[in-house]
Length: 130
Image (cartoon, rainbow, N blue to C red; front, side, top):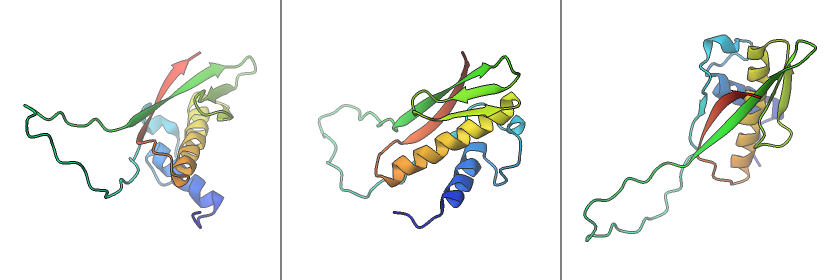
Protein backbone atom coordinates (compact mmCIF):
# COMPACT_ATOMS: atom_id res chain seq x y z
CA UNK A 1 0.00 0.00 0.00
CA UNK A 2 1.23 3.46 -0.76
CA UNK A 3 2.45 5.53 2.19
CA UNK A 4 0.69 8.71 0.99
CA UNK A 5 -2.00 10.07 3.24
CA UNK A 6 -5.60 10.27 2.09
CA UNK A 7 -5.34 14.08 1.93
CA UNK A 8 -2.22 13.87 -0.27
CA UNK A 9 -3.91 11.42 -2.65
CA UNK A 10 -7.01 13.66 -2.81
CA UNK A 11 -4.85 16.73 -3.57
CA UNK A 12 -3.06 14.77 -6.30
CA UNK A 13 -6.42 13.66 -7.74
CA UNK A 14 -7.69 17.25 -7.78
CA UNK A 15 -4.51 18.40 -9.50
CA UNK A 16 -4.92 15.71 -12.18
CA UNK A 17 -8.64 16.30 -12.58
CA UNK A 18 -8.44 20.07 -12.91
CA UNK A 19 -5.06 20.33 -14.59
CA UNK A 20 -3.75 22.70 -11.93
CA UNK A 21 -1.98 22.28 -8.62
CA UNK A 22 -4.25 24.56 -6.61
CA UNK A 23 -7.56 22.92 -5.61
CA UNK A 24 -9.17 26.34 -5.07
CA UNK A 25 -9.02 27.22 -8.79
CA UNK A 26 -12.48 27.19 -10.34
CA UNK A 27 -13.57 24.73 -13.05
CA UNK A 28 -14.38 27.60 -15.44
CA UNK A 29 -10.79 27.63 -16.76
CA UNK A 30 -10.78 23.87 -17.33
CA UNK A 31 -12.27 22.20 -20.42
CA UNK A 32 -15.23 19.87 -19.90
CA UNK A 33 -13.15 16.84 -20.89
CA UNK A 34 -10.40 16.05 -18.43
CA UNK A 35 -7.75 13.42 -19.13
CA UNK A 36 -5.84 11.58 -16.41
CA UNK A 37 -2.38 10.35 -17.36
CA UNK A 38 -2.14 6.71 -18.33
CA UNK A 39 -0.89 4.23 -15.76
CA UNK A 40 2.72 3.06 -16.22
CA UNK A 41 3.05 -0.13 -18.22
CA UNK A 42 5.16 -3.15 -17.30
CA UNK A 43 8.33 -4.05 -19.18
CA UNK A 44 7.23 -7.60 -19.97
CA UNK A 45 8.59 -9.09 -23.21
CA UNK A 46 6.25 -9.02 -26.20
CA UNK A 47 5.75 -11.67 -28.83
CA UNK A 48 7.54 -10.99 -32.13
CA UNK A 49 5.40 -9.55 -34.92
CA UNK A 50 4.00 -11.89 -37.56
CA UNK A 51 6.40 -11.64 -40.54
CA UNK A 52 3.61 -12.69 -42.94
CA UNK A 53 1.30 -9.88 -41.91
CA UNK A 54 1.02 -7.24 -44.65
CA UNK A 55 0.68 -4.36 -42.26
CA UNK A 56 0.77 -4.43 -38.52
CA UNK A 57 -2.10 -2.55 -36.96
CA UNK A 58 -1.09 -0.24 -34.14
CA UNK A 59 -2.57 -1.35 -30.85
CA UNK A 60 -5.14 1.10 -29.48
CA UNK A 61 -4.43 2.33 -25.99
CA UNK A 62 -6.89 1.23 -23.36
CA UNK A 63 -9.32 4.06 -22.66
CA UNK A 64 -12.07 4.46 -20.08
CA UNK A 65 -14.63 7.23 -20.51
CA UNK A 66 -16.59 8.08 -17.39
CA UNK A 67 -19.84 9.94 -17.92
CA UNK A 68 -20.73 12.66 -15.42
CA UNK A 69 -24.45 13.21 -15.10
CA UNK A 70 -25.62 16.56 -13.75
CA UNK A 71 -29.05 17.55 -12.44
CA UNK A 72 -30.20 21.00 -11.31
CA UNK A 73 -32.21 20.58 -8.12
CA UNK A 74 -35.32 22.44 -6.98
CA UNK A 75 -33.33 24.01 -4.16
CA UNK A 76 -30.90 25.64 -6.64
CA UNK A 77 -28.01 23.25 -5.99
CA UNK A 78 -26.44 21.03 -8.65
CA UNK A 79 -25.97 17.29 -8.23
CA UNK A 80 -23.21 15.63 -10.24
CA UNK A 81 -22.64 11.87 -10.26
CA UNK A 82 -20.61 9.21 -12.08
CA UNK A 83 -22.93 6.19 -12.55
CA UNK A 84 -20.04 3.85 -13.46
CA UNK A 85 -18.46 4.40 -10.03
CA UNK A 86 -20.99 3.66 -7.26
CA UNK A 87 -21.12 6.28 -4.53
CA UNK A 88 -19.39 9.03 -6.51
CA UNK A 89 -21.85 11.93 -6.11
CA UNK A 90 -21.40 15.58 -5.16
CA UNK A 91 -23.58 18.64 -4.59
CA UNK A 92 -22.45 22.13 -5.50
CA UNK A 93 -23.88 25.63 -5.24
CA UNK A 94 -23.21 26.03 -8.97
CA UNK A 95 -22.32 23.73 -11.88
CA UNK A 96 -18.52 24.30 -11.89
CA UNK A 97 -18.37 23.67 -8.14
CA UNK A 98 -20.25 20.35 -8.48
CA UNK A 99 -18.07 19.30 -11.43
CA UNK A 100 -14.81 19.96 -9.58
CA UNK A 101 -16.03 17.99 -6.57
CA UNK A 102 -17.29 14.96 -8.49
CA UNK A 103 -14.27 14.90 -10.84
CA UNK A 104 -11.85 14.93 -7.91
CA UNK A 105 -13.80 12.14 -6.18
CA UNK A 106 -13.79 10.03 -9.36
CA UNK A 107 -10.08 10.67 -9.98
CA UNK A 108 -9.33 9.66 -6.40
CA UNK A 109 -11.28 6.41 -6.90
CA UNK A 110 -9.43 5.70 -10.17
CA UNK A 111 -6.09 6.19 -8.37
CA UNK A 112 -7.22 3.72 -5.68
CA UNK A 113 -8.12 1.19 -8.40
CA UNK A 114 -4.68 1.61 -9.98
CA UNK A 115 -3.03 1.08 -6.57
CA UNK A 116 -5.00 -2.18 -6.29
CA UNK A 117 -3.56 -3.31 -9.63
CA UNK A 118 -6.59 -2.70 -11.89
CA UNK A 119 -5.51 -1.61 -15.39
CA UNK A 120 -7.89 1.22 -16.27
CA UNK A 121 -5.64 2.85 -18.89
CA UNK A 122 -6.34 6.44 -19.89
CA UNK A 123 -9.36 7.97 -18.19
CA UNK A 124 -11.58 10.64 -19.74
CA UNK A 125 -14.63 12.41 -18.36
CA UNK A 126 -17.65 13.48 -20.40
CA UNK A 127 -20.66 15.39 -19.14
CA UNK A 128 -24.37 14.94 -19.81
CA UNK A 129 -27.41 16.64 -18.38
CA UNK A 130 -30.00 14.23 -17.04
